[in-house]
Image (cartoon, rainbow, N blue to C red; front, side):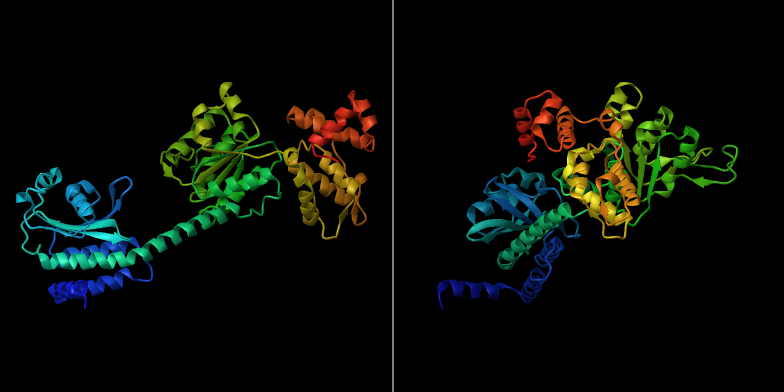
Length: 496
C-alpha cells in the first residue's frame, strides 16, 4: 500500500457516518440519469446542512478571463444568492492559486485573509473552501462560510468537503458531455426548424427558400409582421403559414380586408359594439380583435384605412386593449397582428397619408414577398400545382405552352397564373394544355409592369425571340440592336 492510499484511508476515518451517508446520497444525485441545474442546488443544500454552514457557493472558474461564474449559491434557508460579491473573492482566488483546500476558523484574526475587503464588508468569520480539479486544472471552487464563529468548521468537515469536490470532479465529464449534447441538440433542432418546408409556399427558387427561412424564424415569436408585396403574391397564404408554425396554431386565425370598406363598418368589425351604439345595433357584438385574442389577426391592405382608424389601431398595438363602440369598458386582448400592403408605406408616411408611429409599430419584422417575375423558375412547379388543384385528369403541358408561361412577366403574379391555368383547363378538351388554351392579357403586360429595367429588358427580348421563332437576326432588327448584343444578353440571362 503506498503513502497516497494510506493518506486516503486516514481521511476516510475522519468522516462521520452522517457525512459518509451524505456523500453516498450526493453521488447518487449527481449520477442521476438526467442532469439538471437543480441537482447541484440540491447537493449544495445537503453540504450546508452537514457542515452547519450559513451559506454555500459552487462556482466555475474561467482561467482565461480570471473570473468566477456562479453555478449555485444558497443560504441555510435554502434561498438562492445571485450576487457573487456576497462571498469573498480573495479567498476564492487563494483556493485557485494554491490548488489546495483551505480552512479558516476565525477569518477576522487571520492576517493572511482578514485584509480582504469582502471579508470585512460581509463580516465573514469562518470559511471552508476546496478546489474542483479536472484534468489537472482548477475547474471551480466549492466554498461554505459562516458569519458567526463556528466550531464545526474543522478538519473533519474539510475532509468531507474535499471528498465532495472529488465526487463532483468525477461527475464533470458526464455534465460536460450532457451540456455538449444539449447544445448540439438545440443547434440541430434550430436547423430543422429553419429548413422545415411550408406547404403553402410552392417554389424551389432561392428567393422562396429565403422567404421560408424568414417565416420559420419569425413564426416562433410574437413579433408584429408586415408583409410587403404586389397584389397576387400570396400575402394571406404567408400570414396563415406564420400562424400555423407559431405556438398560437391551435388558437383562432382571423383575417380582415381593410380596403374600400367604410370607416364605421370596418371599425365595428374590428372592435365590436354595444347594444344601442348606433341604429341597427340590437345586441352586443364582439369585434374581430376580441375573437382573435390568443391567436393571430391578419389585416390585409392596411394602407387603406383612414387616419382616424389608424389612431385606434395604434392604441391596440401599444396597449393590447380595445373598447367596443358605444362602450366605456376597456377589454384586454392578446392577438398577434400580421399586416399586409401592396403600397409603399414609407412614401405614404412622407405624404402624411399614413401615421409614422403606426408604421413603426407595424414594421417590427417586415417581409418582402417577391413577385413571380423574380422567381420565374417556379412557374413550372406552380403550373403543375394548379393543374392538380383544378383537374382530376392527367393533363400534360405542351413545351411551347410552358415556354409562353415562363416568358411572360406576370403583372398579376401567382394569382394571375392560377386564373390563366384554370381558364386553360376549361378551354382544353383533351389531356394537353396547348398554347391556344393560354389566354394572357398582353395589353397589361407592359403598362402595369413595375419591375426593374433589367427585368423588362429580359422580358422584351424573350418575347421578341418568341415572336420571330427564335431567329436572332430578325429579333435584333426589330429591337434596333446588333445580333452580337442579342447573343451577349442571352448569355447573361443563361438562355441557350
